[in-house]
Amino acid sequence: MAKIKVLLVEDSDVAINIYEKMLNSSPHIEVIGKAKDGKQGLSLVAQLNPDVICTDLQMPQMDGLEFTKQVMAHHPTPILVLSNAVQKSDVDNIYEVMKAGAVDVMAKPQTTLGGNTESMQNELVVKIRVLATKKVKAIPLS
Image (cartoon, rainbow, N blue to C red; front, side, top):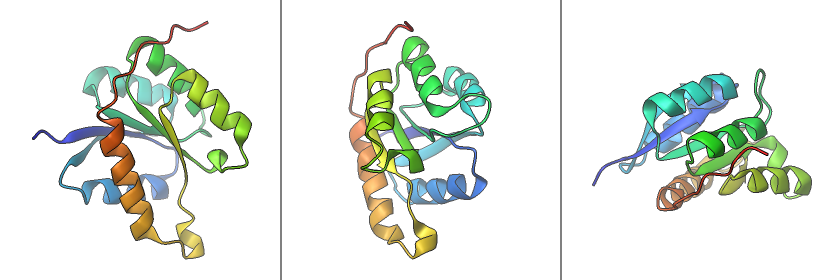
């Protein structure tokens, strides 16, 4: 079975390294690209044709919401928004990214606070594997 190809779009080096380690720990997943912001992410989506994209919301140049809109308009791909801005209380942010076409959201791990990285890793791997099975439709830019 082919590996699930994942593109990470995240401006924090620390977060990108954590996600990459977590995802590469799964024999079913391969991180094929990393971008620092939405602009860089868009050019990589076109080049790499990932199966799933993980993006942060708060980034320079182009934020995760605009990135999600652009991806869904031009290269529809299942998107998981991994961000501090999608805690359960961030209803507006979650609504906006879901409306823009993201398939799922996940709050960033609070690993520095002694969070359980293993359960976070399992949740992330499961989400990616589920998202890879989803077919998404283009959402034209309004």
